[in-house]
Image 1 (cartoon, rainbow, N blue to C red):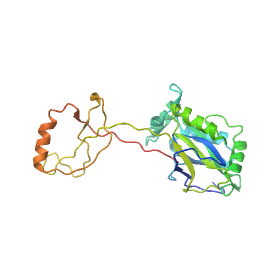
Image 2: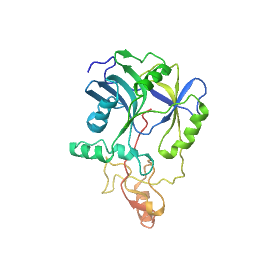
Image 3: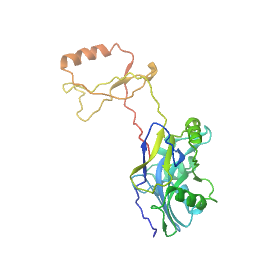
Image 4: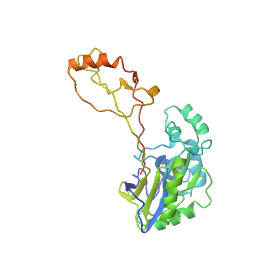
Length: 280
């Protein structure tokens, strides 16, 4: 592989703001997937993660589509997504499951939950390095480069109208999108710098948080454990949300053990693993 920009490349990032900024911006949907820089040089394709690690082996069907649909030599910035046609929305959990060590499982998932790639920036085309050119020009060249591309390769929608962007923000949440990204039209591509703007949907809930870790004198004590013993019971209409830590003496611990026997809202269940995602 010999391109004007070689892997790994850290993607350009966005800072969170409360409202859609006005002015000379391009507004795009914020996709809920894996941020990825894609490199193609002839038959060679590399799908890079946000952290610069190669992901090509996990998405063989996408690598084949990139060879078929992209210009012969290019570097693109975009998002890997998995749509769920039955629900008409994106499926981030299915996308997470695509990262699997077993080759047989990778092949199975490539057929069961095929990935798509949504391109939204162009870093290089042929021998041309576009990173020092304004985004407005990069978007124009990207649109031309992908004019004939077919699914699962897509060009992200974009608008210069903040009213249209607000409508997208309001309407696209049900499809699994995170919000809106605003990109200054005169901005150059700055890897690992927060020079774009993201407006995300805010979700809140009322919670009651409960949990404990075993006291050092208790036979179940594990110095490497976290708060994963009693949590709020989903059958009572509540689920585990988070934890805090406070040290109690042995007297309180004994009293607490007696008290919790009578509390139907507690159950000994493990803390489910959390998901962290935000490629921008």
